Amino acid sequence: MKGFLEYVPGNSFLHRMNPVAKIAAALLIIVTCFITGNFVLLMGIFALDLIMAARCGMMKQTLGLVKAVTCFSLLLGVIALFTTPLGIELIPLPWGGYVGTGSVEAAVRIVLRLVACAVPLFLVFYVTKLNDIANSLVKILHVPYKYAFTFMSTVRFIPLFMNDMAGIMEAQTARGVEFDGSLVKRLRLMVPLCVPLLVSSVRKTNSAAIAAEVRGFNLRTSRSGFKEYPFTALDGAVMGACLALAVLAVALAVVGC
Image (tube, rainbow, N blue to C red):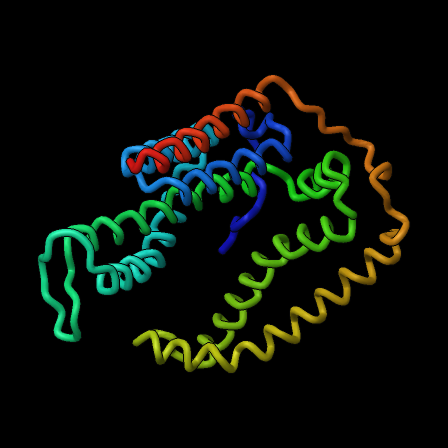
């Protein structure tokens, strides 16, 4: 998982935006996706996601995310398909109820909604340095630094733990363990690997805590950072556009579209 959640440098409009504005815009898009059930608006948001990914030069990573989220959301879609008897009956179910046209719409809506809302936050983490996210939250929103640091460290450790797990699996493969086969078999083989991963995680966490303490972690305040994060017209325009999308979603929900 090399490169997962690592900052990708660039000069796109997303790279130039204020970190807080990026997070606010992403959250507005996510809220819009969950407010609306309109297929046209959801498709429009998904198209907007792909346009932003293309402008950032991250189409390949975004398509990989779309594939992963689609696989996960298909499970939820199948559950909705068999538990939401709506619309014209298409297939009767032996345990009662039926699969109808509304059931299919609900399943498709779940998949499209989850995919459309996952991409914006995904892009934020790739086009923004974690230090900038933490420092901007402290300076602009006055979030206590220990909470911002905890958030930043959690995100930063995800790819490290994934790399550690990949290394442990490669070591086991070199010893003759075969991870090919059914999902149940792979899960059964991976459960014992959680112990060395846990030990490695505790060591990394302890080292990071000692390093932070030595550097005066408890003395840091909102004035400790030298970098400023001013808002620009670009930030206002993007947040305004995302707010307009949210208002549109509310209006469509009110009129029943």
